[in-house]
Image 1: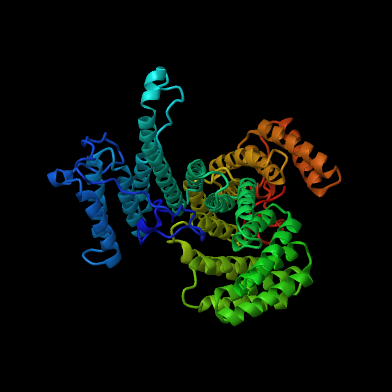
Image 2: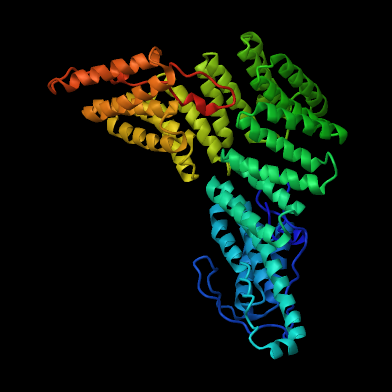
Length: 612
């Protein structure tokens, strides 16, 4: 997690970052203001702030040397772990902040440093929400001052000429201070972004990273190598938020800067190419992704990084699989498997991940026996993984195996695997989106086996997590609302289902467009629920739109078009009769994708979408 601008002054027990990237922090340290009485500004009381620490009645806090001393004590307590450990260090850091606040002007950098230490301790204790206001206060303290107007002070030519040397010397100190403040503000914004990410608030996290990048570029220039590191950091955050266009722009910029400042075939360039390949793969540009992966692999081979080469070979195999070049995919997977077994052992999770990829490949090619065999090999590794295995890596593998078992028709075993994955991640910070995905997949399986109450509860929990994490505007969220509505229909909760379908329609219209198959599926279900509620005219209006779009997209002979015609004809017939109509089963009115969904590898949420 990024800390202060000075790497040697950063707290030793910061919270773990949500992404495994090298920190883009600058390496220079801002000098601390001199505590001498001759250079110290008269202290003034800080303005009250909702995020400031409470006032301390101890007059000893007026001692100008107390703040730096307490800050050093906080670091020492964190390192030693004695005398209360983190709690004692937090007390020192908070007292240091109060003492430095009393000093007023001239102590801003040290105050920001103490607030960073306090926030890092909160994160280390798992109290990320408590760290947010502390970091916001730290960022506000070191906001760079606004530059002075160019024409200011130029009215008198003689006075300007007489005091020119003195003014130039006086301007040097504020300029230097502004740069130091900018670097400290950059560190604060990055740490604040990491903390928001640990709480699953990706929108707020990306906004903080963006502000940090703007400050860093203003202080260091747009072509500085450290700016490239931050661009890649922010690009990965956009990837996690499924914002691939923004991620591609940032990753290209990082690649250009690294190619400009680094030696040919550098490791930094290889890292950029791997991220670019991931982005292009997600956008469906498999040929472009393959090109970047091959170049990255050549760089790693030249630098003797065998394990990284094996990891890239797995990604190359995934790309070949997406291109239906199955023989080349098998060769890449087997090559990677040999290296990983030799380097890390047979019980390492990375070995199991290759087993999972081979299982998926053989399932796609119809070799079901080999597919299930590789699934069992992977499960043996996940049952007793090597020490130090990351829970999120194991959970991800269990989710992929569950999808294969679901495709094989073994829904009970798929549910057991998803429950194991959920247990591994449910208490992990920064994993809310992943947990929501697991719960959504479990909701689909519960629906398919007829456990509609459990299905609705799983969908409800997933929706709540996505709302809390700020992912209310994604297509995945819209499809999830639709599936929860279908579960409510089966439980005869018609009003709740109608609200969910309407919200799903609004989200999918915004994200996918009115003619997208997922949006049309929601239209069809909303028409059915309106018909069940007696709103026949609304249902007819929606079905007429759906039928028109389907005829334009699919043609009049398509089976889906014929189904819509029959439904619309029935509603029109009813609209011309009396209101005393024959009751119809809701099950016949609704389109359930559990009967029609086609499994698509690499997109777990595709199981939630449907076509009418």
